[in-house]
Image 1 (cartoon, rainbow over the protein chains, first blue to last red):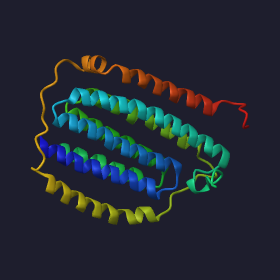
Image 2 (image 1 turned 90 degrees about the vertical axis):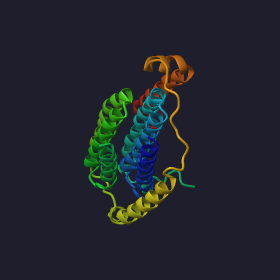
Image 3 (image 1 turned 90 degrees about the horizontal axis):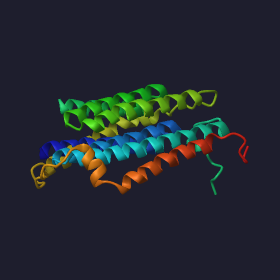
Length: 102
Length: 158
């Protein structure tokens, strides 16, 4: 059980790496959001895998469901902001969002 | 089986990052979610498995696809090529470091397994956690009101 949890943690670390790499190197706003989603998947897997290993799967599930609810809210808000940004700048390039630059 | 599912989740997540077509990337993300949900079913986490398939693989993918459709046009930027070319080197380095750390951890952590839970899922969700569920309702309303505010017409800025 413990070894399976460590194996899961290894894969979760890989998912966090993929998400952070996406956030650091991509310039398309939707791609950046996909990176955030991948990090979120890693977090959900961490919650459930730890609950499974500790024999507390029900409380882990309830926490993960809370996270999914928050995730949906964040995605809806973020994508609405992206659409509004596109309407103003006609571009999804994060490098062109320089209006608030000091 | 579980190892295969974990590899599939990571592989489709990599595809979602590296594919330059946004629609294909969004669909890869959904496929990754489906494999994650199957993994949850394997861990006997049925409720979050159902949520993962219906909400994350379903609803969030629909939101992504509709956003991609609404922002497609003359300004649709394509990603640069170098992140996809450089990625394998970083990825292999990270996996090697990850395997080394996990091998060092094997057998050294204290046992995690605790006492079995009492009661069913609904008892734990509604009995043990009460106040934060009210906060969740607040989060949903915050999301709804933000979307309404962002899409209203005739605002002072237009």
